[in-house]
Image (cartoon, rainbow, N blue to C red; front, side):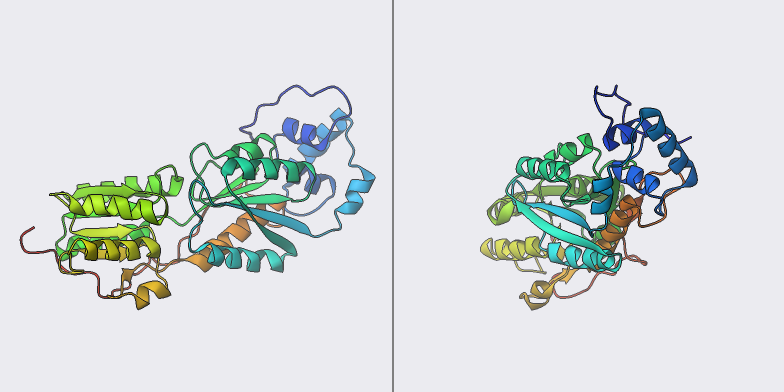
Length: 355
C-alpha cells in the first residue's frame, strides 16, 4: 500500500488545483503532471490513482499550462553564505550534477542567497511562479528554512547531507566510510587521543559524522575530541583551544582541506611539529593539500560521484527515471564503489613517545 507522510487536508473552496490532486493522491505535483500527461517514470498503480483523484475533484490540466511544458525543465540549487559558508568543493558537485542533468535536457541554475530564510522565501516565490521544477539544497541543517519552505509546498527537493525522504524529497549523502578509515589508520599508528574538526554541529552531515567517529574511537578504548566552528577565524579558535589543553589530541581529522591548512598553521603557532607532535588528515583532498608544507595526508573527495547522484536523484523526482516500488525517492548512496583509500603524505606519523 502506498502511503504518504503528508496529511490529506480539506480542500479550499473554489476551482481545484494540481496541488489539491497531489495532496489527496499522496504524491508530488511533479508526479501528477507526469501521470496526466502520460509521461514515463510513474508506476501504473500511481497513474491510475492520480487520474481517479483528478476525476473525483473535477480537475483538468490547463491548456495553456500544458503548452508551457514544452520548455526545458530547470532545477535550482540553493546555496547560502550564512550561517555556514558553502563547501570548498561545491563546484565539483555542480559539475557532476550538471553533466547528468544536461544529458536529460534539464538545466541547473545556481542561486546564492545570504541566509536560509532568504533562500526559502525566494524558493517559495519561484515555485509559485513556476520558474523552477525542482530544487537542490546542499549543506542541510536542522531547522533549515529552505527545507521547511519547500516541504510545505510539496515541491520536489534533493537534500544533500541528510534528511527524511518522501515522495517529493530525495536524500543524497556521501557517507563516512572514508573518515572511519582515516581514524583506523591513526589508531594503527598508535594514536589514542584523536580529534575531529568540522563545521557547525547544526549541519546534519557533521552531527552524523561526529556520532560515527566517536563510536569508532571509543570502541577502540581511545579518547575522542570535537572542535566545530564556522569560518576561518572560528575554526582557528576551536583548534587552538583543543591543542592548548593539557590532554590535547595527538592527531586531528578535519572535515576538509581548508580545515587541515588551518590546523597546520595553528600547530606552528603553538610550536607543534607536524607530524612528530601532531598528525593531521584532511577529509577531502585538493591541490592545496598537495602543495602544503608538509604535504597533507588526505581522503579523496568523491565530487563527481556525489554530483552525479544529485543529478540522478533530481531526475527521479522529475519522473525522468524509473520510480521506486513504493513511489518514494530513495536515499542514494553516493560513496565511491570501493572504500576510499587514504592518500598518505607527510602529516601522519606515530604519536610522541610521551603520550
